[in-house]
Amino acid sequence: MRLKLPIARLLKAQHRWEKTLLKATATSRKLLNRPRKTRPKKDKLTEVSSFGSNPGNLRMLTYVPPQLPDSAPLVVVLHGCMQTARDYDEGSGWSMLARRHGFALLYAEQSQVNNPNRCFNWFQPHDVRRGSGEALSIRQMVSRMRRTHSIDPARIFVTGLSAGGAMTSMMLATYPEVFAGGGIIAGLPYGAVSGLRQVMSAMKRPQTRSGEQWGDLVRAASSYAGSRPTVSIWHGTEDRTVAASNAAALLSQWTNVHGVSEEVFTQTSVAGHRRRAWSNRKGDMIVELYLIDGMGHGTPVRRTKAQARAGRARPFMLDVGISSSLHLAKSWGIVRRKAASRRI
Image (tube, rainbow, N blue to C red; front, side, top):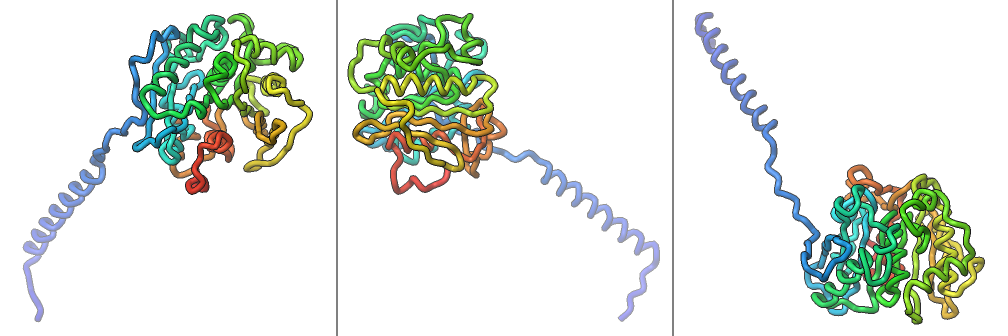
């Protein structure tokens, strides 16, 4: 059956259809361009405002996973310059590891009031001396964590980057009875400087000292005579901020403190990077050194789906195919075997 409609009616129908189509298109574009409602990101770290006299005027932030097991390990993390605790946690993946493997985290955070660049004051004598300044503030934070949570006193560790790495050296030297081990990333040896004027020269080239002289500085930092914490040293060969010669000085310092020969070690390759290890008479690893070829100044991370933001959004987080956080946790024996194979 053939329908015959006047041209005017056909044009009128076409006009109505075009109008309807334009309206529908406009509505679709509006829906597509409408900003999506996103939930605010939940903050993983919780601030603790009261933990002692806090002579160093630092902030204390913590991460405690749900159902923290009894006698859990504690890792103290010290960020680098131009960073915050949240920045460092986001990039390094420590809270992810803590939740997965059942240990607590303590972040000390520097303020711009203390240092305009948010660097820990590892070069100020009163801040790196046992019983005063920033060193005592961090010690008080550890005590607060032990009072509040079920922390194993034999499994407390400390790690940090750059100024945080230098402060890690200070904590291991001044409070050796507190820590079972430490991870120093792009840091400097204890006693590298005696004041602000020496900072730049020490970062470029440490003072010429023998291993015994470096070790004596650590031994003089406290009256402690017991076993010393293990030390893991991480440094990039192309670090233009803190020269890799500081890693060599750290190695001389801590092999001497542990009484082992710097010349006797084992060398392996981990994720394509050189690792050297020094052991005591029992065969236990006491000092290790990771030299990351071609890496500049920062924390070694391995980018995964879970940490895709680490390489581009967080300062001084360098994707070199190896997670220093994971390997530190492994060396400290706080990684559960069942979950150890998961990527981070």
